[in-house]
Image 1 (cartoon, rainbow, N blue to C red):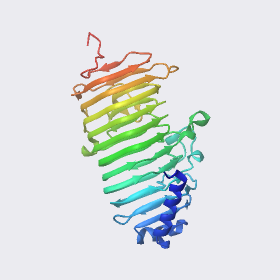
Image 2 (image 1 turned 180 degrees about the vertical axis):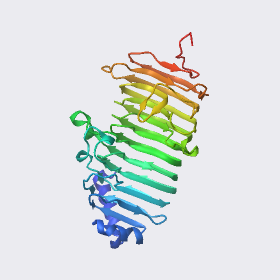
Image 3 (image 1 turned 135 degrees about the vertical axis):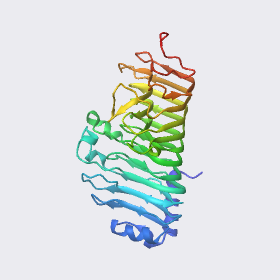
Image 4 (image 1 turned 45 degrees about the vertical axis):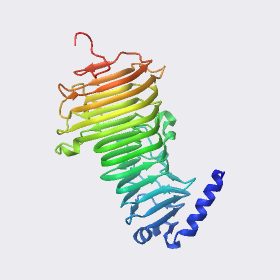
Length: 370
C-alpha cells in the first residue's frame, strides 16, 4: 500500500511529465498566457503581487492545479485575491499545496469597520465544474464566494483561519463559504475553522451541504434579503444541510431574513443529522428582524419561511457561557408555516427556548397563554 509521500511524488512526477512547459506557471507574469492558451495549467509556488487578482477565466474543460505554496502579498484593498470563471472546469490542489492569504497582516479586531480587507476567492462556474482538495490559510476577509453558478461541486477543502482567534480574536468577517445566486450546488467533505459563518447561503436553489466540520464561527447559516428592489434575489429554495458537526460556535443553525428588504421567499429548508457542541449563544436561531447586522426585535413578514424541517439535531452548550437558549424564534405574523421538527435534543442551556408568533410541529416552546 502506497504511503502519502509516495503518492505525492507520483502526483508531482505525473504532472511534470504531462503538462506542457508553457502551461506550468512559476511567475505571475506568466498567468495570462497560460490561461489564454492552455487547458491543463499548473501554478507552482506562485507569488501574487499586492493588489493584483489571480484571474482564472478558463477555457471550457480546463484544469488548474495548485502546487506548493501560493502566496498573496499584502496591501489594503477589496480583492478578490482569486477570481475563477468557466464551464466544466476543475480547480484542485496537489498534495501538500497551500493557498496563503496572509490574513494575519490584515486582521484588526474590527473586520468590515477597519481598513479594507480582500475577499479571498470568487467563483462563477457551471456544467459540472469541480473545486477539490484546496487548502486555504488565513483569508483576510470572506473566504470563498460562490456567485451565479450552476452544477458546481466543492469538495475536500480545508479553510484554516484559526490564527484569527489569537490576541482576543483579531479575525472578523471570515466567512468560510458564501453562496449567492447558485443553483444545483454541492459543498461537502470540508473543514472550516474561522470567526464567522462556516457556510452562509443568501440566494439560490437546490443546494446541498454535507459532511462539514465547522469550528469557532457562527454556524451554518441562511441569510435572505439583500435586495431592496428585486424579489428573485430574495428567494431561496430547496436547501439541505446534513451529516455535519459544528463545535465551539456562537450559533449552530441560524436563519435570518432582512426586515428592511424587498419581498421574497424561503422554502423547503432542511437540516438533518447535525451534532452541535460548545455553543455560546443559540443552538437554533430564527429571526425575521435582521437589519444592518443586528436584531431590531420587531419581526417582519416580507420574506416568509415555509417548510423549515429539522431532523436529528443534537447539541450541548459551553458550560461557561451565560444567557444561552436552545431555540430562539422570532417570526413575523403569518410569516412562518409548515415547519416539522423531530429528534431535536438540546441540553445545557441556561435559559428556556423562546418562540414568538410561531411554534414548530414537534417542538413545543410557546407558553400556555400563547
